[in-house]
Image 1 (tube, each protein chain N blue to C red):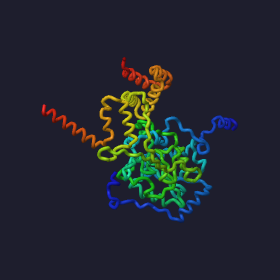
Image 2 (cartoon, rainbow over the protein chains, first blue to last red; image 1 turned 90 degrees about the vertical axis):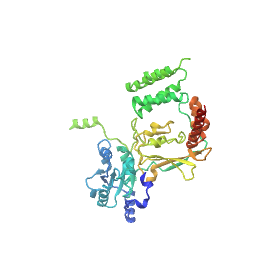
Image 3 (tube, one colour; image 1 turned 120 degrees about the vertical axis):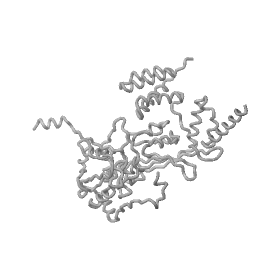
Image 4 (tube, helix red, strand yellow; image 1 turned 30 degrees about the vertical axis):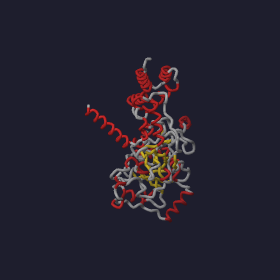
Length: 260
Length: 176
């Protein structure tokens, strides 16, 4: 990344707004015993609108964040909480700061989505300052791309101190001389590669891998009657698309069999 | 009026009881990637595949440990790490409760011991991966396992060996 190669004194860095000690104390007090509704104002700093869609899904009848008094308001002057979505683009920095100052103290700032937390997939873009935190003091980070409505509700609950966070920073050191196991040791390596390529050709990444893993698990489980196991796998599959991939893999398996 | 209440009763409650009741996510939901450090050989396939650079691998200053590191804040939950992993060491779980108050809590890392080249002493791969490669190659046999004894050398040393062998071969041909 260019930022790391370039001397930092030659790069202009945005100066983050530092929270006043008095305000921080008031905010802590508020979060300890919050007994009222929380009004939310949403600032899009340059996102793809996926996060906005999820925020509006959160206030629909199914997830209904309004039953907790969480309401999306159209002005930062009514807001207790500001949600910053999207990576902080250079041109949206000023409006983001204006929205922050327009909200009454003590305001809660939420970084929403992968882009809001760290800049996400745009973290090394030329016009992006990273997430919300290089500019503003952030109270809660809600990762996800976009966060699902349930994750949003969890984020609100974490911000208000109702639920505890589950993730914690962790660092492990792997023990020395640990042996890794070999996946599917009974299938020859080249045959395995051929299966994996064929399955990915048939049904793309992610699902192709899941299907080929299921197929190879069935083969390696029953070593005495491999074709019987494959036939049983095909017969038990109700999804016709998956069945087609299994049948294709079976014909590939037939082509790999060598008569002795 | 009575009919309305009956209709309401029949329709039931559309709202999920999520924060009060646990919510089961549907199959195929791509949630938090779970790293199994025991299965992992630190081959860095996931770090290369990760489009958002959420997964990174870094060598420490003493060149003894290679650290696998994930930032859940940067992850876009695409599942490419699961896709490329040869050993099922990383899988996307249904866990969606990832919100944190402190940004540092979004990071998880694991260090692996690095193997050093037998000739020049440069770090070239994780010891666990070298061991894994040796076992896979010896099992595969054939031409793939021909230079299995050179697995302790780094890429530069092996290139040097290859060049030397090629030069020798060329000379004998020229003489003939």
